Length: 247
Ligand code: F6R
View 1: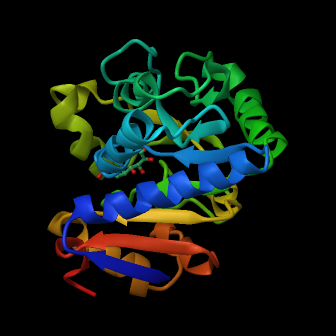
View 2: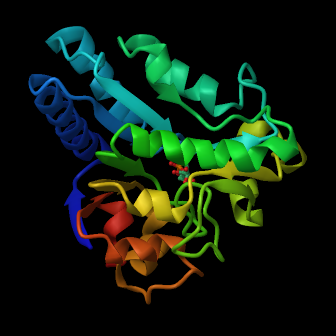
């Protein structure tokens, strides 16, 4: 795995945003769409800020961009303050010119019996769009990518999962207590993530340093699903100083 360490997450995020912008412009110049896999959480926030700035100040258009988010809590209403739909609208989509029909986020309102078909269709839509050109990822302290928690295999598909205890503890403050954090989520599987032509993983802060070390230097194992990225031939791990301190 290629690791790239920057002084600050802000510096790294600008580089990532510019890579995404270059991809979007290159595709647009050929009359093609750029297909992006997107993440929520704190890690990509500065990337989204810079993409919004590039749209507002430098005329970057998202008209040719198709997005697929990694995950959503289950159950979850889209208008909830905790939903990833709301997160994406507030932190990116409301501020750019992306077409609503091009936005895809797993549906937290489905009836349980409809989830399997929804997940198969989600992967079919990615394929139909031409596959993910670039997937951005954060890493959870469990080593999850998306919500593929320890025990997820390299062949795991998009599906309903049970969140690990550590993941729910980390989410508890924003939900006002662990009892309010959903126990499940719908996540893109490891398999469709690994099919992305390019993967940009980011981790900031000393809290991520131990799991970053395992991801980069540890044995490839479903105990740390992020280690599967060692077998992806076009992944870069963007770190700030603090997240890289154990490498
Ligand atoms: C979010 C996601 C998660 C987060 C991870 C890190 O859509 O899929 O895997 O990327 O939990 O979260 P932050 O960035 O908040 O530390």
